[in-house]
Amino acid sequence: SAANIQRVARAARSQKADLLVGVGGGRALDTVKAAAAELNLPLVTVPTIAATCAAWTSVAVHYSDDGVFIALKPAVSPALVVVDTDIVAHAPVRLLSAGMGDTLAKWVELAATFTPEKRNAATEAAHTLARLTLDVLFRSGAAARRAASAGATTPALEEVIDAIILLSGSVSGYGGDACRTAAAHAIYSGLTVLPAVHRLYHGELVAFGVLAQLALEGKAAAEVQDYLAFLAGAGLPITLAEIGLAGVSRSDLEKVAATSVEVEDMFNMPYPVTPPMVLDALYQADAWGKKWHEEEDRR
Image 1 (cartoon, helix red, strand yellow):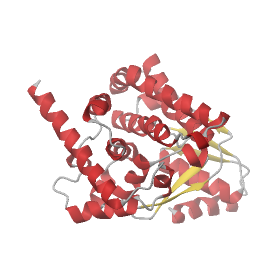
Image 2 (cartoon, helix red, strand yellow):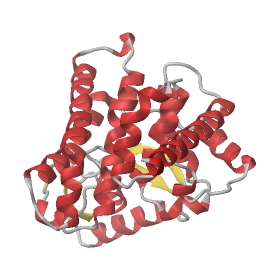
Image 3 (cartoon, helix red, strand yellow):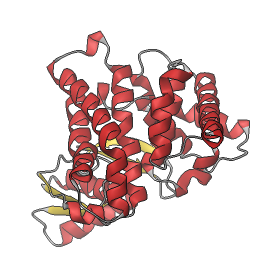
């Protein structure tokens, strides 16, 4: 939030700092990145969790003091990122799952936004890396989660941490504003207008946003089964109830939809998106998730 960014900036000025070091999760790192940008100081990030690619990217998410999304703004690109995989391995496994949900969006969003007019060497690199993140998650995600549950550092966990921080952050850097984010993150931002979702982590809401984007794109149920299986297996939400919105009113979801289409991320979609389209996508994603659980119960 603006208040926290200014608090850090004042502390750095008062000590005549030459360098800022951010330690912690995404909001802590984004706060320090934004303060470093204001002060024009170099920055080292030390992520203690692998819940987002915040440690590596040169943007910061700004929120109100109440946790409502405001904007994604430029920040300092870290001069150094220090990742101790043993620390990440001992963090709550839910945070690693959230990181996998956030990273899954890289491929889904880039696949939608990678249109011919945006094709160049940098965006092709982003496209290739985004596909690699998906492959890493699908082949190593379950093993990484088991390792984190045991507090063990394994090759699978290290590979997934690299996908979440290094590869995902590189996708954002190469893709730039045009190919960084799309509907999944816009819907995440829209969901933050409802206080009931504030108990969830960024990547958990983005995970549901991924399903909503796939619905928005008109994907058939058969095309989303792998995503549903991965998300459910990682303990990520695939229904409205699982993001704290059991029995949510239509009017509240209309607020989410109206906010989502005004978020800059949504403008990256290759066609205009309207609030009714987002509302339908939210209901479709929820229906997919419910059906998945019903079929799993029968199995």
